[in-house]
Each structure stands twice: as structure tokens, then as C-alpha cells.
Length: 333
Ligand code: COA
Image 1 (cartoon, rainbow, N blue to C red):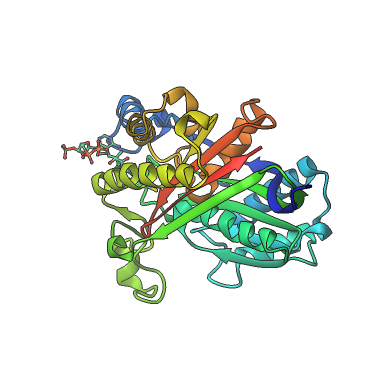
Image 2 (image 1 turned 60 degrees about the horizontal axis):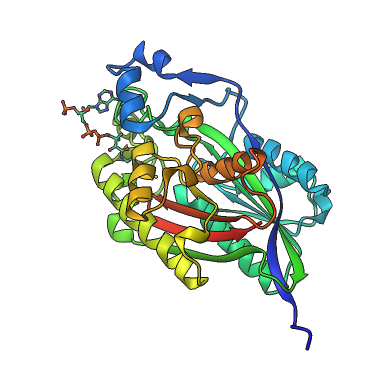
């Protein structure tokens, strides 16, 4: 008897956009008490991209979205939904996704932002997966876009060396196939007990913009580096295992892990804990630093472009971000 086919969430295209301006570790040496050697050995980062004045999350996101539409051979009016995952929106409201929608001319698409910081893209992918698998929508675009440079304290060597700007996107498409394809499953979690671990404490509701908030740089990212490091290793390892077990898969089945690019040492420790060769992990942190919600879609696109995600390949996405939030997703190409 023919097996009943059901809706699956295939990745129809990927695309990225990075600002042209490059800020190297050597550039940072000129303004901070730091060194290229310290940054490279402690983080793996060599350079990061910085948005120009007239660029923002919506402009970077729209560029990535157009590249993704081209890659998928689709037009903007085919999009049913645009989810922008960002922690550095253009304005408080309306959502950055509405600016992207306007820029694309995607008149049919419901457009809105979600905020799960570095985990944003996996959270967004999970929302797209549900809309697609339920049959409600045919094409959902998920964009991760950030201008982290706008919330950095450029005098704080413990944080500003880590982050960069950029955008990446995917189109999640509804297909009916018998064999498992596309997003096999996604798993997302939050624990608000650790909300102070990584936080931009001011500039809005709790601490509105005022002279004192500006003087204390309350609009900038504050981070407890070591606790975040440990939490990232623990949660990314745990949720990776859960995701594989859920699908009846083992680490040996995975062709490429696409980890959040926060620190090369975090990625190496996760690879050790999972007992997986580091060669299976796609790493591009040296070029871009941590681009928060854009980190995974940029890495996903580059892994695909490099030929590592051919048809049939299995990729495992894993992430931790402020909130704290964490998640994983398995994608069959
Ligand atoms: N250049 C030179 N020295 C620096 C430095 C820099 N950019 N940043 C910190 N240091 C110094 C510290 O001041 C400290 O000096 P001290 O011992 O004299 O006080 C020393 O280096 C060690 O600092 P420490 O904070 O213990 O370093 P670390 O090995 O934990 O590395 C991070 C710091 C931030 C790189 C690391 O903790 C990290 O990556 N954490 C996770 C961050 C993250 O992933 N965030 C995003 C999650 S989505």
C-alpha cells in the first residue's frame, strides 16, 4: 500500500548579506587594551563586519532576503510570512520585518519580528516549521539580521571584540514527500532565571532613555562571559543530543553541525562533549565574530555553498542565546 504523504518543511533557498566594512583585531588593538593574539586564541575571531551609517537590520535583512529569493527562484509575492529574528531592530516599533516586507514588495506576507537574541533564528525556524507542517502556509521566510555594533560599548574589551553585523535567511517551503526531508524537528527552550547573564538593560521600559542611562551606557550589552560560556556548552550539548534522539538518529548520522558562532572554544568543547570530530562542525567565526541571530543562517548558507550540504546530507543546528534561550534543529537536505 502506498504510504500516505504529509506536509514537510523543506529549505527552498538560503542567502546572506554582510556589510562591506571589515574591522580586524589589528584595528581594535589601536583603540583597546587588547591584542590580535588574545582575541584569536580565546575566541577564534580574526575580524568582523560593521554596518555603515545608512545600514540597519532591515536593510541587511532585505539584501539577504533578495539573495534567498533568487537562490530559490521565487518572487516576493509568493511569500506568506516573513519572520525577522533580531535583537537589534531598526526602531522599537513597527517591526523590522515590516520594513523588509516593504523593501521586498512582499505584499501578501504577514511580517513580524521575534526576539530570542542569538537563538532567534532557531526559534523563527521552529515557528515556520509549525505553519508549514500544519498546511496553513506554503512559503515562510526566516531572516536573522543584526547590527550588534550599535549596542556595543566600544571601550569594553570583554564584549566588543566578540560581535559583528550581518544577515542570513532561508525560505521554508511546504512539500509533500514520503521520505523525511527538510526540518525534521526543532526544539526550543528558555530559562528566564538567567536573564541577567547577557542583557542590554536600558534605553526602554525598565530604564528609559535619560542622561544617567546614557552616561552609564545602559543601552549597551553587558555580559557575564564565563557563566555564558559554561551555559552555552551545557545547553548546546544537551539539546543536540535531544534533537538527534527525537529523530532516532545518532551523532554518526550527522554530516555537518551548524553551531552558533559565539566562541571557537565553545564549539570545540561541544564537539568534545558530543564525542564528534571538530571536522563535522562548520566554523566561520574567524570572519564574522558573533552575529547573534544571523550567525546560524550565515553559517548554513556558507556550508551549503561549500558543497557540504548536498542532497541527502543531515545537518544539526545548535544554539544558546540571551534570555537565556537555547535550541536545536535537524535538517535533511
Ligand atoms: N583582550 C585582552 N585581555 C582581555 C580581553 C581582551 N579583549 N578581554 C578580557 N581580557 C582579560 C580580562 O580582563 C582578564 O584579565 P585579568 O585576569 O587580569 O582580570 C583575562 O583576560 C581573562 O578574562 P576572562 O573573562 O576570564 O577570559 P575568558 O577566557 O573567559 O574569555 C570571553 C572571555 C568573553 C572570550 C569568554 O568568556 C566567552 O567567550 N564567553 C562566552 C561569550 C558568549 O558566547 N557570548 C554570547 C553568547 S550568545
